[in-house]
Image 1 (cartoon, rainbow, N blue to C red):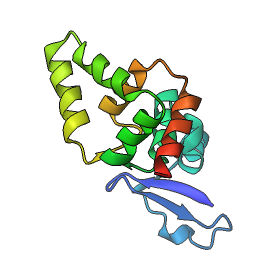
Image 2 (image 1 turned 45 degrees about the horizontal axis):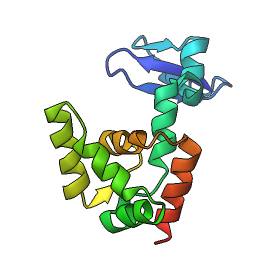
Image 3 (image 1 turned 180 degrees about the vertical axis):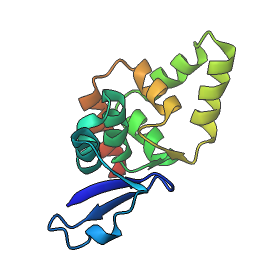
Length: 138
């Protein structure tokens, strides 16, 4: 396929390599460079580590409040998380995390407050993943 960007609409169009659609390519089209074509066809190659991490975390199902708290309790972490939230020095961050912890109906693995709460535990990511998978089964 040959890939072109329409300069009027900024849309990408693909045309057959054999030239059978060349009459559709007007002066409004400019051919993509090899890098642009690669970015289009292989976007994962151009993701930052942070973007890759967010995609990874988004693959975990959300937990209910019950699942989240029971998993913490069953792993001896509930009191640690609650005490650590109480010990947060920044009043705005403390309120934000407390609201997220107390009021959320669902806990998403990639959520900033959830990441903060789990970060308090100083657990490696693989252990947090195990905890999350355990919680799903509850």
